[in-house]
Image (cartoon, rainbow, N blue to C red; front, side, top):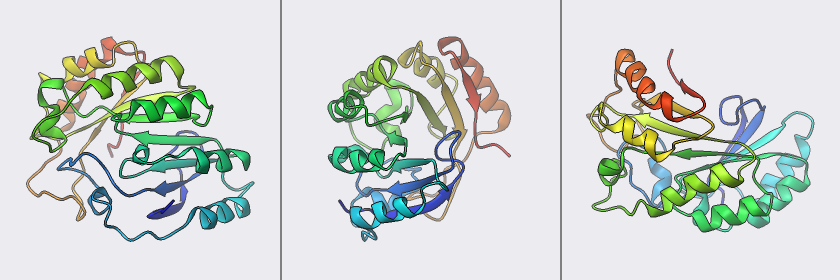
Length: 229
């Protein structure tokens, strides 16, 4: 498998763990606020092989205690062989996903290869296509992935990146209904970077974020803001 990036140490990508992060190229969405735009079309140059990453992980045993798999969308490919080897080295695995591949997600969960899953919930159903940068979008796979995490994941979170041009007060009750009963949900503000493909997007203010947090809180067990100074 081609691996497009390796962050050798992160305290942010896997809650409660000193981890590394593997970045996989390719994505089936085109979110205009994506921070990893160079990965989404699969044209970024691979930097590491499975063997090189596994050798790195062998040398870091005792220093790292987790591996985060992110992208792009990791579930565009069969992750089971790589995750099996990572787990054999003693590392728990966290997966980031957009929820569009529930069959592959189910297979990994049923095989016991995932310890934590973070799934993006982009927006209310009515604005999902706009938010993921597509002319149309079938929300069925996302709904299936939400149900899978609630049923099978050892631990998980849902998260939404708020963009002033894409979210408003009507977005968040519908997001709450989509993930109702979930263990936890995080709301994080968009942050502009050079890698974001579209200019002119802005982060909402703190007051808006706190109001939107309150709109989802009744639907979930735990809700919190993330990524604020």
